Length: 138
Length: 81
Image (cartoon, rainbow over all chains, first blue to last red; front, side, top):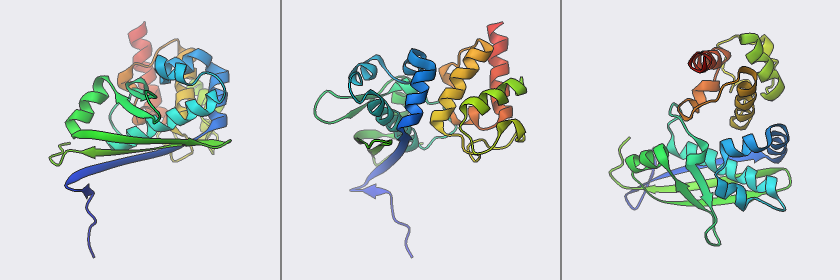
């Protein structure tokens, strides 16, 4: 029997995933409107999600934020959603952290991340993989 | 205050059980509360108590039980007074 190490080429790896119900996001948007948007999403994310499939895109981004929270693996810590931002500067979604979460990522030794988003008619999902420095500290 | 919190949970929590009938220390996540539903609960609590949840209380444990929610809301109501 072996304990499989959570390292790749000596780099520790963190992973997070999440799935969101599109209808729930639609309902929140209908019930709370801009307050819901501004509490969870950055101005840039709100802008990126405009147009067709707005709700699906928002749901995928909410899933991404939850996936990142899981990657931190610190359930007792505060997680301001807007400090986790999904950007679309190029063809692939990217992760941008700010404020206290950027500091905590640095403390955990986050070096790079890869983010994948997807959605169907009813659900959206996200997976994030983070490579950390070998000398990660908690 | 707990009655108002339970009413909000019943309206927005999407839980598998009636939150008006659960123990005030029961784990709401075990009873079906999701992270996304907790956002709706938070926004509805802000409306109900005329408060705003600051970043430092945006953590999983805040919404883990009726008692936890009550303690956080009590603190926010007092600081807003």
